[in-house]
Image 1 (cartoon, rainbow, N blue to C red):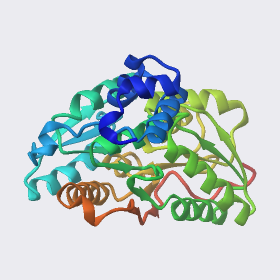
Image 2 (tube, rainbow, N blue to C red):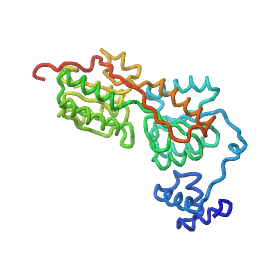
Image 3 (cartoon, rainbow, N blue to C red):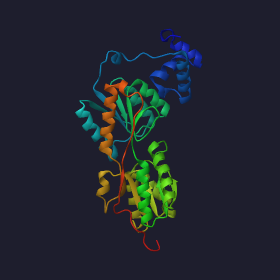
Length: 334
């Protein structure tokens, strides 16, 4: 059946849904369930149905703006990431439109839906949306994903496995034999990757590791984690990010725990504050500015020459452990 003969009514009949549901599945996928979206897409594919390209794209017009989604701009990690994006966007003569979704999935859906018609491409720096939703989004507009891999999408991620390997080796050298990974948001891809890498590295170094969480990726989340673990503290904790680590660290010090003599505390990201508190927070350094630059440069290449990149490009950037004052040898008898 030719495309011009197929309508949303045909797709609706095949999928067993209302025509309005078909329209929402294509224009606002966040407004339908994942199962319904999959059913509609399968029916459309079977019938050979295709939506019309946006008029601006048909005319070859561009906005020279990029949408940048971040889950929490108050987190210094994302501020530095966006700074790298800003540098690259300025060099490429694009403006940035910032979408701060405040860790709210509904707000993220609404923000992306509003932005998709006024930008040329989108960088997702911490999306919590499903793979199906993201794959539909990339059919409408070029997308690059940070800190996550999604089949069919361009992505840039830190090398979590190498970073966690260095972290466990450092703790083992200093006598830690029990480690708790203090987890971040439940739907965070990077959290799952860090936990997977932690288990592999722990086995290699003879360390007993367990996961505790999820917790909000904030200092308050770290304080809550300490309160839940204070009666059975491990030798060391590796936290989802530096903010969680700071909350955990401050709570431990207030409770009279000697750091690192009784407890080693480690974070992730190396925000600027990590170097300034006491002897400094031991952390896994992510190349934030470089990652931001790489994402924008890749997105612009996709926008300007889409036919040159038929398959998604996945990149992994190196990370490194920076030991500071919150980890070290355990006290005798601790």
